[in-house]
Image 1 (cartoon, rainbow, N blue to C red):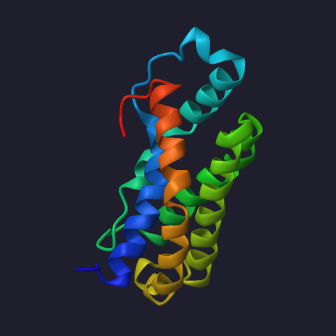
Image 2: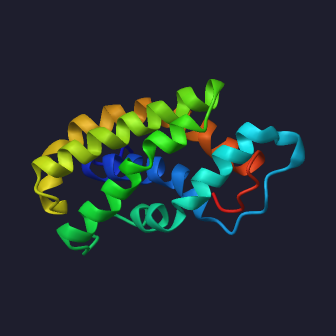
Image 3: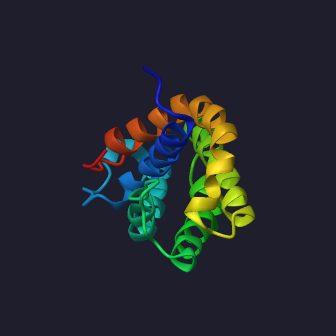
Length: 153
């Protein structure tokens, strides 16, 4: 049975943020074989961990204030240039796609005045976009686990 659009869109959002939340794990240092680029990306990702972890805990039943939602998402968004700047090749392309989706979610949150209840009207369009970003989400998750040695995911 297919989940209702509201739940599936929320799950897609949570999955996109969860990829970035791997940065919040109690991470081991990156392997020496990973090179300077991955070390840089891993370091940048680890630096925004606290905000990303909190943002990934959201669900349709979250009772977070609009001000807190706004702070969390805009903090993640502010770190987009640093994460993209530290990434190269296919990981850059995949991160770019994940952030593209998150930026759409942020735009919808702004239209809903950062109210979770107001997001219901956007879930149908977010559903398809969330499904389209599943492969890049998995690729970034794998990168963070294998290259950065982040333990959660």
